[in-house]
Length: 318
Image (cartoon, rainbow, N blue to C red; front, top):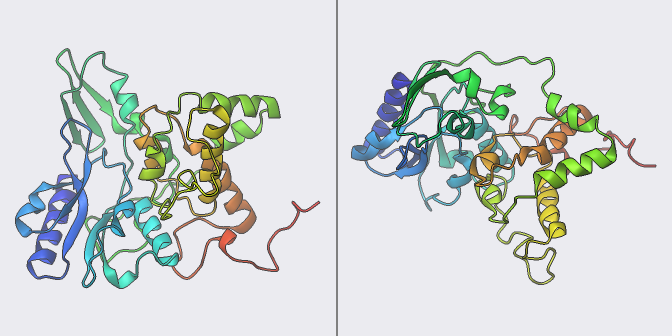
């Protein structure tokens, strides 16, 4: 990973020094261990702040349109899911390809920070990544764990670890995963009877505090006014009524249908540890099975729910 970091820094320093881009969107160390944060770098001297490791779980595509200059380009470091969301932004006319210099970063997965924190009874003071071995330190103990044992679920089932679009790669591509049952979690919920499924989602949202961190972290949620903030008409209430909470989550999921890359940024951002992906995973499976569609793989095609074709499946019409 150190080699990858140095390559990213070298590429970015060269781009900024030669004026090929006006700024670079990447990751920097946070104020506490395992808290990598997005950063915009505008000078060659600041590229030393850039990092990339298994804690860089947010999706940088979420920040691109906010920092685009009126003229010129920006660079962005992009793992597989980031690049797929950049493709979606291009398809949906949020950004054009010639405004971006994409630094592709092959990814072997991001760690589940809550799973790591659960291994300790006190505060984690250091996090060191060395290949597949993670060393985590607290005042009471020092523990080594295998990265694959603490990966986020979306990374364990990811089949697009390499960027799908890039101008330069920061490392050699990694081997893609091939899964026999990529949607085992969806099948588990689908096997429940209706009452049990409803109970599952009621339990899932019971601790939601309506902070909208999942929406704010999602690179697909770029509407100028979100439906939850609309007041004329008001689509959903502002309080903690359970119906309003469910309405927010269900409608947000449907807005992501056929567009979600399962990057996991929503789960990463949730302060209550809610597995928001349970709302979107079924829609991803349906898009694949009904339309042969995975989001963000083709800059020439629009999402299936964004277009009409006479060949669209219509078995659902009764």
